[in-house]
Each structure stands twice: as C-alpha cells, then as structure tokens.
Length: 91
Image 1: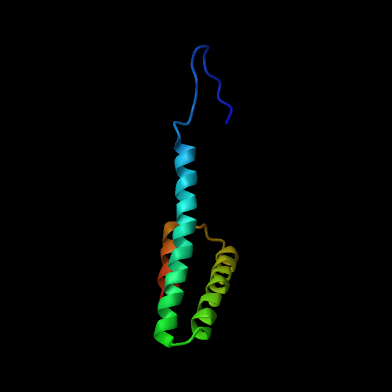
Image 2: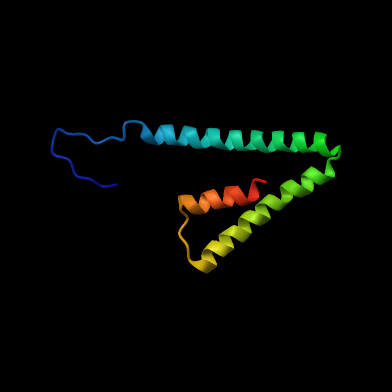
C-alpha cells in the first residue's frame, strides 16, 4: 500500500495486521483440536479406529468437490455458499 502523506504525518495500521495473524493462527489450532475431538468421539461411538478415520478422510474430498462445483457453475465464494457447504457436510 503506497499512500503519500504530507510532511510530518505518519501512516500505520494500528496493529490490525498483528491481530489478524494471531486470529488466523488460533483458528488453525482450534480446527486441529476440533478434528481430534470429533475423531475421538467417533472412535468411542463406533468402537473402532478405522471407521472414523475413513469418514474424516472423506472431508477433504468433499471440499474439493464443492470447489470444483463452484468453479463449474461460476459462483463466487459467498456466505450463502459457505452456509450451504457447512449444512450439507456437517451431518
């Protein structure tokens, strides 16, 4: 971002970039923890390690399918599309 300021003025982001980076890092940790907890609950429920593993392996393939479908139909990635994805694949 190249904005010119008058002499004596300074432009800074006020720490917004740092806050966004910390939030993104925290969301990665929370996503990993959520996947682990879902795996543990399913492993206890199914009394097997294989079934939850197969189910969780299918999630990236579903995401790839959604991305391909969005590209084919030429939709923009918007909130309704995100809600639909979560609604269809969350169970």
